[in-house]
Image (cartoon, rainbow, N blue to C red):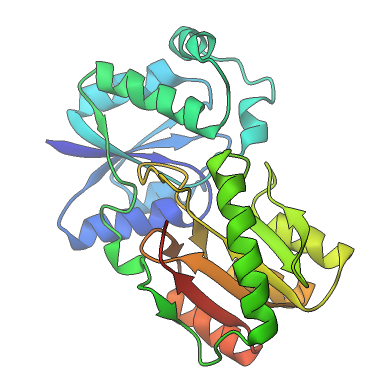
Length: 268
C-alpha cells in the first residue's frame, strides 16, 4: 500500500515528505496548483498538479498510484475555496451536499469522498510525532503574572472560538480580546493585533476540543514568533500534543533572544 499526500502551502508538506523519507516511505503527492510551492517536485518522486476544485482528478491520481491512506498537510486558504475556482463534477456534487461550508464540513466532505474510493485520510502528524511539544514551559522565560492572567482568559475564549470553527487564535491584552483569527490565519491575526494595541500582547492558539488530527492541525513556527516580536507580543500559549512546532530549535532561540515566553498547556 502506498501513502498519498495532499499538499497545500507552506513548509508542512515538505516536513511530511522528510518524515516519511526517514520512515522509508515514498509519497505520491497531489499538489494544489494555487497553493503548493513548485519546489515540491524536487522533493517528491511522484507529483500530480491539481486545481483547487479538481477533486475527481486528485482521486484518479491516487487510485492510479495505489494509494490506500492519504495525509493532508499545508494550508489551503479559505478565500481560495470561494475565489471562483471552477469545481469539477465530483467537487461540485460534494459541495452541494454540505449543510455548511466551514473548514470541518469542507475537508470532512473531501475525506468522505476519498473513503468512498477506499482511501483513508489519516492523522496529518503521522510522520511528525517529534514535532508535537509536551506540556510545560518551552523557553527559558516562563510567563509572568500578567501573561498568566491573559492566558487564563485567552484559553477560555479561544477554546470557544475553536469549538465554533471560527479560528484557533486570539490575541489578548490585559484580559481583553484584541483580535480573533478568522480566514486570514494566525500571523495576519497577530499583525492586526499589533496595529490595534501594540505591546504587552499574549497570543493563545489552541486545538479544538475535539480536534480532528487529520486536518486543520494548529501549526506554529519561526514566522509566528517573528510576527509576534514585530507586534510587541511577549507570550505564546499553545496546546501540548496537538500543535505542530516547525523549526522548533530555531523558533525557541528567536523567542529567547526577544524574551518571548512559550508554554504548552494540556488539551481539553
